[in-house]
Image (tube, rainbow, N blue to C red; front, side, top):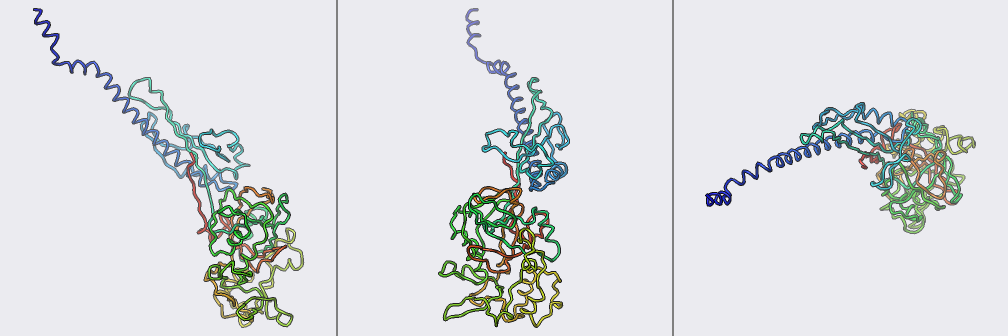
Length: 469
């Protein structure tokens, strides 16, 4: 008997079944936990994708305009359709559902590990809508129904996404103009029809503490961060300046930077002494008419003002009439678009009547310039084509692209700083830039970016809505 008991005690057959029976509840429980964790992960992914989609759709509308938040909310309500599963309350995500909230931000903390605080949040969504640069979207379902154990049925799974909108332009010259119209909407309104007001841009020479005013111009940081006059001047002379600038802020260059007229005037076939800007790399525009006489001495070619006997045969694009009278607005900086078209035409196109050209009676100077490009052989004493160097084939060579800043709402000083941009603009140069100390630049705005623009600057735009958190 004792031998039988000892044999039974030592017999290990079937022990695995006993162990399995003992461990089965743990194995089943662990399996259910793995399944639940997989479902939680899938639910969280669904919600995160929904939050990301909501925030990006809304961020694309945050362009700094007064109605940006209205349009962003509309995008949240209509542009995104997102569905989540793996929850007892599975269904569509909508802005109206209790689990979706949003708040607009004017800034983000310096690093991602820092929480968003009240100072970052837009509190008055009507008055401060133009300051909204980011949106935070929170998505939280009612709860998650776990399979095991029952105590996990109170789980909630949510998602948070922060997106923002950046708009930048590339191939732009490092220059800003203080908006003489006061606002981008007023500037946009001035671009309807054919008439374009001439602007007389003055360089601010007051030094570090001097405030810039409407009609003043200044300079921006170069991509390399160089503050040297040669680096700035080279970008004005270049056919394709390697500069990109963001719509939400540009860095103005501090100090009293000397004029960059040499960089502008190569576009008119006027080159400085030396070989700083070889014409092969920095060619003149195909139309350089400027009311000047070609002077050739040996191998040297230059331009001089016409003498009294030549004056009636040479005529540059006239300034607006109010500049001559000294009655232009904004301290004689902003014209009316009324200029001596008949006088200009009779000197430079005596064989063609203006009425036969198809040009509007109030045609802008840039429209006249384009007509002259298409009729290069129809000219008076001064040809449109440059006499000294081989021209570029780019019709837009006499256009510089610049940032427009509201220098009243955002006081700009000579100390430099980071300032928001109202819009970016293409500026047609009507005559060579003046030299020191005045460095005046005359021209007219052709187009602007954003609403109110005509789309000619779209190729320069880089608009991007992106996730930040």
